[in-house]
Length: 175
Image (tube, rainbow, N blue to C red):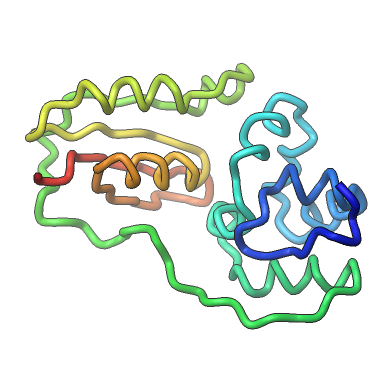
């Protein structure tokens, strides 16, 4: 892809950005230290392939507009106005009941081992009974996972417990 043709937007995928503008890797890492995980070849070729810059901003806990315009400034693109609307539910929903959690997966160890947990989680969600809740424990906001599950009819609740500890509860959306 010709770098002159890639216009940086919230929907630009991280890997697409880095392939077009390799120099932006250090800019990303310096802007959000959590992005240093991009140096891991496995995460770069899996997570970065599906993660948009809007999702990356959520993961890094920075404003999408600030991230996009920082990157655009580096490559000489005009600055833009970007909506900051969050797609993630952080308010405890009425459907949440601790006793209804039927399955829980801590993905921190899987990620450290270089494994990609998305397929396993999606398989588990597909088996989830309508009145049950599936809980994921993660070291960051797994924005692509939440987006994928939402597109397949699951509601979610995202709870931040620390800088690198997030709980994400999923429940089937009522039909």
